[in-house]
Image (cartoon, rainbow, N blue to C red; front, side, top):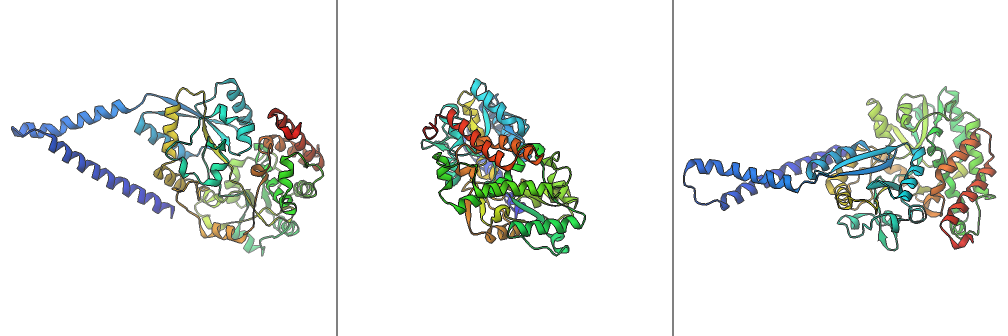
Length: 460
C-alpha cells in the first residue's frame, strides 16, 4: 500500500506538471503581438522562459532556518523533504540532532537564554508545554496557519494552551509502546501471546531455555526503559480518579500498590536475565538489527518495527513482527498517548515567516504521504489529510485490545518533564542502588520540584 501511495503522488505530480506547461504555453501565445516573421515566433518562448526563471529566482529566499531536535525525532525522510523545500523556496534547513540524554537540558538552556533555534523539537503535553516550555511566551501561536485545522483534535489538545495551538506533530501518535515479538520464533517454540505477567515470565523462560535472549533492552539511551512504565495504566484502571488526585496533589506515587508491583516486576525481569547481559549498554538504534539477527525475541517498540527489521534484513518479512500490550501488573488495556515529538517555532526567532513556511510544507498532503510511505513506524500521522497504512498484523493488534487508557505521560502533570530523571533512577534500581519504593518516592520529589517551579497552587 505504501508503494502505491508514492506511485500515485508521482503520477499526480507529472500530470500537474504537464497541465501547467500546457497552460503556460497557451497563455504565452495569447499574450504575444501578431507574429511578424518566423524568427520572432521562435524567439518568443525563449523570452517567456527567461522571464519566468527570473521571477522564480526573485521569489526564493536566501535564508537558513535552524531546527534542533532529539535523536530519532527527525527521520531521513524529513531531511529529504527538507531538500525539496529548499529547492522550492530557497530556504535552507540546518538540522541539529542532539543525543537524547542531553537534549532536554540543552533545550531549556537555549530557551531560557533567548538563544534557541528557529524551530525546536519538544514532547507535546497540555501540561508540560506550559509548565516546562512556557509556550505562551516562548513559542509562536500557530492557530491561524493553513494546516492547523487538519491536526487531529486529540493531538491538537496536547499542543494547545489558552485555546491556541503552539505546536505541530512530528510523529505517529496512534502507535503505542508494546511488546514486539518474532512471530515465527513464537510458533516454533509453541508460545502464545501472554495475557498477564506470570504468562509473560513463562514465555521468557522458554525462550531463554532455547538459547535466545527474551528481551532487547537499551538502558544507555536514558529514556527507552522508562517506556515500560506505561503499564502504569493499571493504576488508573484500579482507580480511575488516581490521575486527577495526582494532579491535585492529593495522592502520591509512593505507596501505590500497582506502581510498586510494576517497578518490582521490572527489576525481577532484569535479575532473571530476561534482558540478557548487555541491557545496560545496548543502544536503541540497534534494536531492529538485534531482532533481525535472531539473538533476541522481543523488544518494547512501536508498530513500525516490522518495516525497520525488514530494512535491515529484506529476508525478514515485515509481517513476521507481532505485538501485544506490556503485561506488567497484568495489564491488558491499550496504553494510548496522543503526546509525541512536535515542532515549535521559537518566539525569539528572526526567521518566523520562513519557519512557518517549513511547517506548512511538512503538513501538506504530499509531504504527509511521503513520510507515511518512507518511515516504517508511521502508519497514521495525526492529521486528517494524512493517509493510513496499517497492515493486517498491526490492525489485529489494535483490535485485540478494545479497552484504552491514557498513559501518565498524557494524564499526569509533571510526569513527562521528569522522564529522563526517572530513567536515571531506574538505572540505579537495576544496579541495586535504589529500591522500587525509593524510585517512586523520588518521582514524587521530582514532580514537587516541577510544581514549585510552575507555582502550582496545589503544591503550596
